[in-house]
Length: 358
Ligand code: XIL
Image (cartoon, rainbow, N blue to C red; front, side):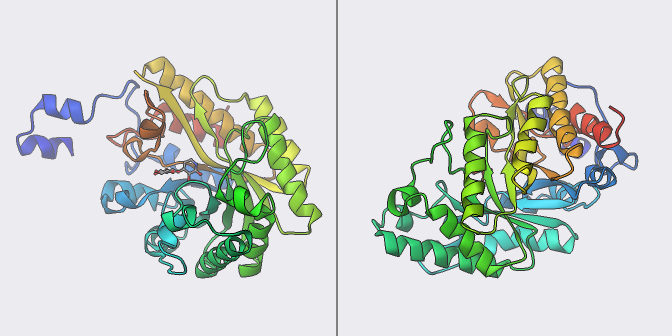
């Protein structure tokens, strides 16, 4: 790409601005014949996991360099549509469903033989305006939620390994987060959602998914309480998804991640890392990049040694596609591959963990 740009007369300075040199030693890129260490899914499966996966977002589907990696089953055995299955895209007006954005990712992943984690049926963000401003009464909003979940789960029936049924329902102290569903329906919106999903596809795994539930604490206890409540009501719940949006140098310790997973698994559910990324406070440095590699590797290792941790999903694998810079100002470089698709040290560190060499 660089030599091609040079051929059309782009100056070195312009190139440097577009793709600044990464602050880590050059490593083997995916697509290279010697790309073995980046075949993360193959290695994860050998380590006994079901998959190593990634979120994939729609704008990148036109980028061949991106899709060659995203839909390469040796690298990623599982894909999560980053946005396309969310409420605002799937039910833009009440009762009118469109699965175009989700299907664009799902179809490519299915063709590549990859598993799908489907995401997310109920979340307080990325909701359509008609829903948030509709002032619906309790009974009407219950019907709306049930119809939405039924339509979407039926559409993807047989295609998803798992659904994130309810996403981010908790405050940091483990209490229920205020949102339109809690305000109108009350806490029973969660069992209502899981029951609707179970009825629409009895075979798909149903997950509760949240962030800051990767180490023991009030929020993890809140997530455990959601699982217990569903179980007490005899409503199907199969897993807890730990998003794992980490900060290099401030990620939960390996030991606390292990203990945390044990607590969930003791309830009889499986667990997964569902949105792993490790953001860096800019400017980046070789030390920070190394710390990031350690943090990625610790999370992967904690999952590898925990039998009922089924797999790890990174929240996109390419820095320009990451949600981090626009969401957490002053941070970035959170994914496994730089803008120029160079593999960062985290890739080698994860591969080593998966190969059992660390
Ligand atoms: C993010 C997407 O990556 C962004 O493109 C979008 O603008 C906002 O949502 N937790 C989740 C994900 O469960 O759905 C979020 O994805 C990131 C945080």
